[in-house]
Length: 109
Image (cartoon, rainbow, N blue to C red):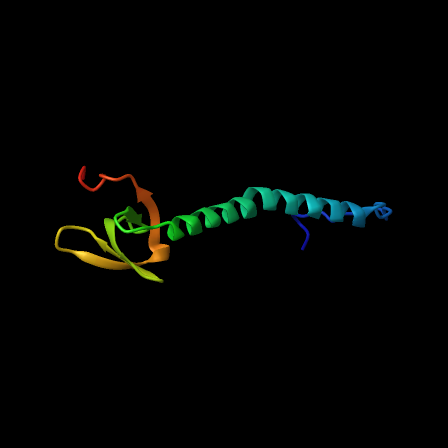
């Protein structure tokens, strides 16, 4: 059944010397790259978001992760009540807040 594929004939080659050490060094370099390119920036963003959530106060204009903009009217431990118009208030989780906008942003919309 080997009409299209020829059999590979290999000579008995000696195993490379120091293969285990090279593998360990390569794995360490790979982990270092992963740490500095993925893990460290993610941790930095998480710290910044936590600081943003803790610094919220009444009257701040915020945007949720879903894109809803509103003014914070009441702060709770886990939830924030925000006014999205003169007659409408909604409750969202604190973690849903994506950014704090400059004062007066809602008037310009």
